[in-house]
Image (cartoon, rainbow, N blue to C red; front, side):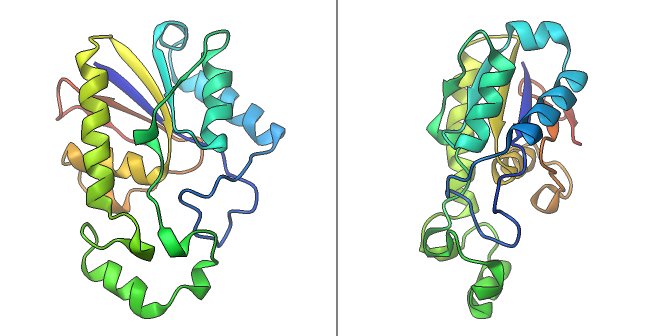
Length: 185
């Protein structure tokens, strides 16, 4: 099964801010540019036929609606970005250095801001991808977040997944049936 993971457009007010679950909007121009770029990367047949899933975040849902039209995307809670708890909405520069260092020492197990660890995001990802794969469709599209995409790549043992660059609007194609097959941006 081909799965196209798409990162949302750049949200308004995000630069320099920890905003995992913070629901930030996107501007229309950014949305239009991102839709056009994605349509150039995913075959038209796939865009017409694939099931489209989205994180509940506005920045994802608007993009998913544009890609799925005239159909409606399926909102999937498991596609949310990592919950940064008390870090949410804070400038990165205001997050205590000792907390950032603790996360760096235990990248997968530490829960930044006391809420959710990357390993917990990985569990959500595994549950969601297993459900989608069991639906036996040939292709699916998921509009989600950089953290979820990195976890997906890590689950396929992609080299450097945790630090992979996942720019806004990136399309990452993976094959859920053949974990060794992976294409990153």
